[in-house]
Each structure stands twice: as C-alpha cells, then as structure tokens.
Length: 141
Image (tube, rainbow, N blue to C red; front, side, top):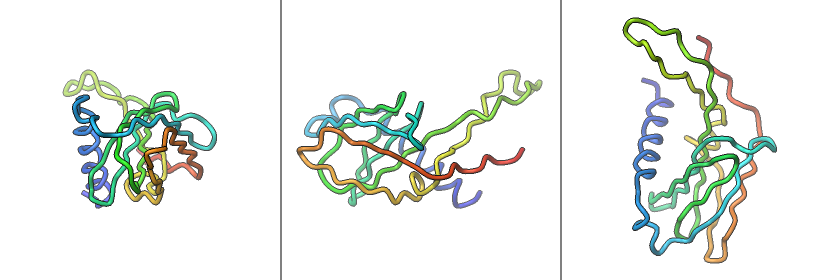
C-alpha cells in the first residue's frame, strides 16, 4: 500500500470518528459558519477538518459549499476533502450491487499534505475557504 493511500486511510478514519461525535463535545467551542469553493464553484459534498498544533481536530461536512464547525481558538491547519463519482462498476456474481467509484479531486496540498493555515479567534464567525488550482488527474482503469 503506498504512503499516499495509508495517509488517506488514516485521515478518513479520523474524519469518520469525528463525524460520530455528539453535541456534548461542542461545549466550550466556538460555532463558526463557513463556505468552501473550488475554483469559484461551491464544493457540493465534502469534509473540512481543522487540526490544531496539539493534534486535536474538529471536522464538519460540507454541503452545497457551506459548513458549520465547532472548534477552539488558535492556529489551525485546514484540510478539505471532496470526491467525485467516476462511475459504477458492472455488477458481478460476487458483487451484485457495486458501490460507485469515487475520486478525491482536490490537490493534496488542501488535504493529506495541507498547506492551508487559518487562525481562529473568539471573534471568528465566518471561515471562507476559496480553494483554487488544478484538479488531480483521475486514475486510469
């Protein structure tokens, strides 16, 4: 398994665990509304994660370019994941209902190797993520 896929697996595992947290974990955190765009268009479906220097993190789903996240003040590394469907494999006897094949199209500098930094303060009410660049190339089948 390549280092990229290991990092992606760990990252997605963390996001999945964070997505299961209840409202009790929001106490003492700031509520921040946000927008996320890719080359000017709203990100339809994705996840934003704010990672603090002490490795504490908070995640929220992105829906139609908008998200609400609960987090603590301080510097954050921002990661954004967004996938597109590439298609659905043909059914087989072993997999009669295959899942769609999805592809992480945002460049890794916005997710697994994020270089995007933001500082959250007690005055932060809105977090705008205006991502730009070249999309990653989908793998060949």
